[in-house]
Image (cartoon, rainbow, N blue to C red; front, side, top):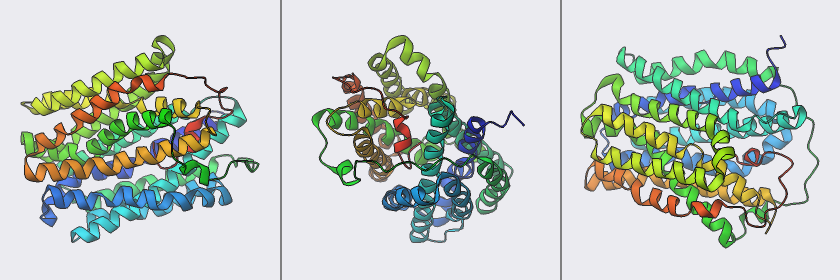
Length: 397
């Protein structure tokens, strides 16, 4: 039983959490067709997920602090299993919006519990697992997307397929959650929540704008990759889900190798290498003549955006104008706004032009992120925080 260490149990929970949601992503075109939605209508409905996340964050933090991360993970998985199945049962755009908002609320609750648990395991064991755990999350959403594509190719309806995946994952997730150690209560901190939302410094603003372009791209890949393959390149069936599966696989690979790149080249150079790849990948998607070329573009983008958020978190946490948790909280909010803004922008542009032009909207924001990579350089940094700052970021993995 020594194999089931707290570190491995935490990584397993990270891996299991996004599988059900990942199985929903390849079915978005199917639901769009069933509801008769155009790109703009779908863009509005997809706003439900980030809206649910943003509305839940102010309440999820105190609640997780009160009941503990292990209870948050266990009960969150139960609620999440129910909510993840709801979008495919939607019969109109409003119902789809509400269903996705409920899913976003439960997802943010579970992810916050996972981040806090990973941080507690790091403190109790002395081993750094946060970045690796996020890598397993990326693998999980890739696996879910592949499962969803496979079930679509097999002809199983979206609502039953997603429910099947969620129900099969739930017992394993509950077992892993209950097996996690209960962290010791944290002492109250001197910093209040209000300071996290004060106006950011110029240094923090640059970091936030850097990460905005990359998280906007991640949100766009989740919501529009399948539709891009269908509408721009004529892909059908299970093939439409391969775009996000490839993207997620490369995000995971980049996260698993990100620490090595950072040690070898430094933060700014690593960010510039990856930022260039993301920009090149977006250009490849825009001109892709066939599905294989587009899949290569998704892969390049995945590698490009993989380490942007962890690098930005570290840079924000090292600023000395206020507490690291306050700066990371602002960065978290901006990152979530990226997820919120990206999909509808692409949808509204695609409604009036086409899907290729919609995807091309990512090119200028990725160029801005590339130009701002220098903001990640340490400037009079404070000593390294006593815990991994990524644990302060709820709802973003």
